[in-house]
Length: 306
Image (cartoon, rainbow, N blue to C red; front, side, top):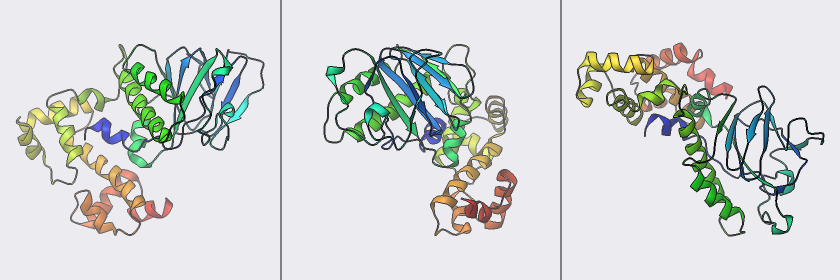
């Protein structure tokens, strides 16, 4: 697993697709749940994403916008529209209200032309995904014409039918669309992607990141890591620190504590010692000291708080 794949693994659409019915102006849909991450795209037409804090972003035909919570946002036909905002959230029940649960009957060819909005709201599952969210602005937009366009073609075909397994297909298509969108945004000209994103492409630092994520419980030293990669210890230490922003073992410790934070929540029956061994610590006391140093609290306190 690479660094991006690891950070993305806790983000999954699961029954979280809002309605895709055709909108005719004027409209103002206020998404009130404040989901940690929300993907918005239009299959035709256009509108504006207006975040609670920040500047409005245009959403044109086949553009995609990602909004980071917990602040809410509104999708409007035009800035300053006079129509009263309609609150949309997890418990909306019908497509015309942006419903998350209602599936059948989305396709309505009798509605004619308009703007077809698709919205996927992503819950946050643990500290791993939080590290990805921290790399994103409140609102990011990727224009049409990129690698996400074929995914939109599949989405357009799927929302036009009522078929068994439709929810599963739509959820996975949204995941695919989110991956494509974030890749393009990180790679955009003049962009400022997180350090780990650029470092993944380096033959030395990138391979080190891959190994640390694939084998976090291994008793790594800089020398052992350098040996696996086939470079000198000093070369690895310098390249990794220059590109990632911190030494390899410092990165590894923070990553281990991120993994441990989620394991403490997910595995209620596991002892602190068992969690410690899972992330590479034979001694639970050494693990607890590292956890408190990095996370600011003890493993037991973290488990109680979550």
